[in-house]
Amino acid sequence: MSACTAPEDRVTRLADLDRMEEKNRKVHAFNKKVDKALLGPSARALHGVMPDDIGQSVDNFVDNLSLPGDVVNGLLQGNIKGAFTNTVRFALNSTLGFAGLFDAAGDLGVHADETDFGETLHVWGMGEGDYLELPLLGPSTSRDAVGTVVDMFTNPLSAALPEPEKYYGTGLKIVSKVNKRGRFDDSVDSVLHESADSYTQSKLFYLQIFLMRNCLNLII
Image 1 (cartoon, rainbow, N blue to C red):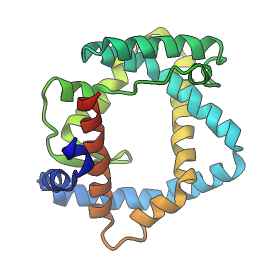
Image 2: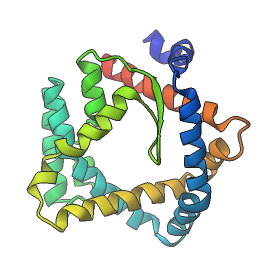
Image 3: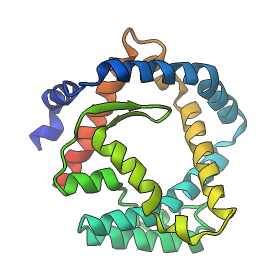
């Protein structure tokens, strides 16, 4: 519990695992340019014309599509309760929630047990590895970078859905991400474009959330 309530020392130690800082800073500079020239303006424009209820429905749909992958990772982690909860949630939202557009399961008190393959590797005992900044995807660690790649193939819906339906979800995921960038525009700009050292700020911000997530997983 103390690690979760006062994680600053642990975050500092993780931040020191930045043996690729020179390359990471180059990727960070590239990501900033993409955000300033393309992603930021597109996000603000999209968020400006998309009603909040439509944006929420898109987010709900995307979250529902991710649930089968969460079920797989829950089973790999030995988290039977979480896998069962996510299965029930997917069934409810896919039917009563009109393919996930509405959070019917949440209204019934069935909330997602979110996870990914990076967390699975954590449960299996794999260390965080080095801090990385990925092109377009932003801050990560070497462990979570592996998890991100594996998660692209572990969701059963990827194999079950025919073309072109399987690509609809990918398109809506992009829309959801861009809209969220617009929703939190001021916060993102304050870190990326207004801080004296945006690389260090984004790294520490990510590691703070990263450590908190791992601590909560150990407690739960």
